[in-house]
Structure formats: structure tokens, C-alpha cells
Length: 107
Image (cartoon, rainbow, N blue to C red; front, side, top):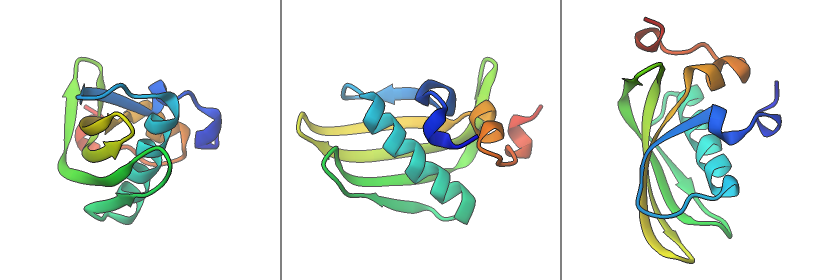
């Protein structure tokens, strides 16, 4: 299923956000993180009307209750000021986008 057809709250799980997270910004963070995950890279720029900054892979998988997946952190400048968002790509979201979830999150 194409990511744009999946609700953002299934694709990412926000662990911490110092600023309000709109659906559009959450979707943009998902796109950047998924690109990093697919390419096995560590940093992706965020450039656009919603925010400026970068998303970094934290290089580890997290499990919080029944939700798990690879962890990321975004350092952003938005119209509301500077903010930090820590989130993970959910196992369910990875499966729905056709990606193989990380092994550590499968247990």
C-alpha cells in the first residue's frame, strides 16, 4: 500500500515532540525516516515550507509496549520555532509499505 494512503499514526509512533506535530509534518518525517531506513543511511535533510532541519537515524530499534521499530530524531526549525521530535517507524507501518521490519522489533 502506498504510504500516502496510510494514516500517519500507523506509520510512526512519536516518543517525544517539543512542538505540535501536524499530520503534514508527521508525514514528512515518515518519508525522511523511511528513506534513511531503505538506504541504510544516518542523516536526511528536511527542506520545505513545513520545516527546515534534519532527521537522524539513532541506529537502534526500540520497543514500547506492543509498538516497535527503528528509532529516529528530528531537529527542526518551524514557523513555531525550534523543535525536536523523537519517533520510530512502526513495525506495522513498515509492513504496510512493503518493507521488512527489523529483526529486533519482531520478537
